Length: 387
Image 1 (cartoon, helix red, strand yellow):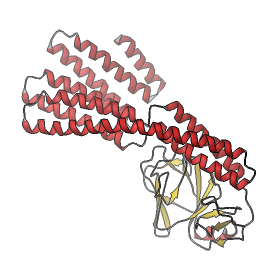
Image 2 (cartoon, helix red, strand yellow; image 1 turned 120 degrees about the horizontal axis):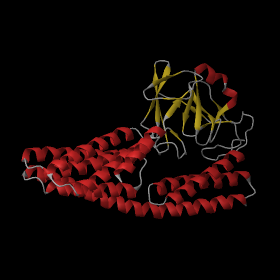
Image 3 (cartoon, helix red, strand yellow; image 1 turned 135 degrees about the vertical axis):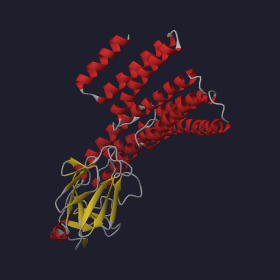
Image 4 (cartoon, helix red, strand yellow; image 1 turned 30 degrees about the vertical axis):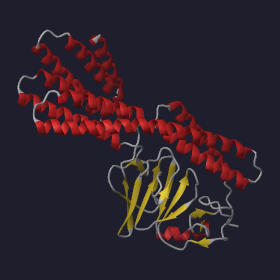
């Protein structure tokens, strides 16, 4: 069996798939673990443990930076379990404590990775906590130091509480996600029967928001099929919104007169403009200065900051990245008038003060909510008529 798995590992390496290579390394570890159970003595077990640590270390390396980070977290948890096995075989209390400490560190790293990611399933998160608790309980039985035992007891209690919370959130989000998906389907169907274009647009926009939120909730649960169905419905509603939006000549609302401006060049609400202050936050969550209803946009995705007479853009650790002129950025990047910024499915163009002023006739401010938008019959943010 091990020979077959090693062959699969070599195939994965030739293919160049980091995810497949990492999975294959963990499969090798699992096969070696079965051999440990049949080992005749401590020396043979130690040799197998060394091989297991080598392969799990490679799994950690290849999973590093991959998104979603479940493979990386799993590799750390497997590493923790191996170190617990080694600790159990150690006769020296000092050496045993060293392996216990390393094992605890890998448990902590795994759950930190899961907790910091905005891409996770509650079931996967609860499984990770359960695995960490099981490993910590084993470690607890291997140490005699009272302080270490108390520290492990605290971690076990905290992780057990998180395990319960993850299971509860999984149940709650499944229920709320199903309700939102039902609402989105109903509104999307209702919109088709409305004669008034603005009423139809309002219904479709609400359906889009509900479907997008449902997709996010269900994605984090054990219902990937429903999550995909909600995502497909959001895409359908997005297409209807773009088809319903009608551009009209400007002149019926307050004109923009100066300043840097960020304009949506393509994507939902193409043509909409935003004034840039000293700091502008972009993302999917409430509280961002520019909120993007896009499932490929992270909750807190990117930030623009005024520096001198220009702007810097920084990615805020987003899942799908921020692109400037087609290149993914990994550090604060200077922007110039005319540069393009892509976040999710939305592409922006940033305009300097002179260019923004030259485009006065193309952009207006909604008198009802103050949104900066392209010339339209109604505000794409609040729905207020502009004519």
